Image (tube, rainbow, N blue to C red; front, side, top):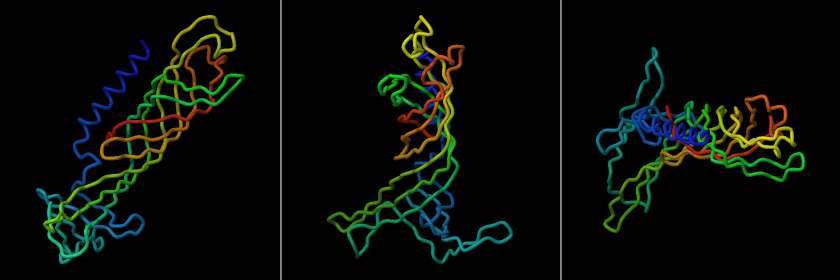
Length: 236
């Protein structure tokens, strides 16, 4: 029953992400972007119909940005150009990240005579981190010398996770200190690195678990490290 509860929890959270995220991070929306990954040059991007209008930012005055409208660039869905087979323009957007993650399995190292374990009990976690999204406008030339635009997205983030999960409790994982079998509720915390490709978020996490009942003193994995796979969708 506990496993079913966590499956429902994760599904509901992920569906909620899709509903709440009207300005999804995997889409190029109106806003201020860095033109380069490291350098500070920025521009304002305005999405107007099928066009992306890019206006360089020259500075800030009285709390408001100033723009160089003479350098405005317009990227329509198709363009004609005389040079090269491909045209690429990148935009970067750093931000704080809030995700709901599912952890479908954890790998636990050998301990107290137990071999390495692959724990497939499902877990759900709240993720808080710092993220950079890259949006790439990519134009490829067709045989008619027309360049057709595509927008590719990639995000990278690192941060903290906290959440709840389930674990199988029995005599073996307690070194014969209990004689029953049940699913224990655990609290987990750790670090995660995630990558985003379009609207899918996936990554790896390193964490520890705490069993939330009286048998935590016997559980061999109490506060012991694990590494796991994470998947999820972005909330903010």
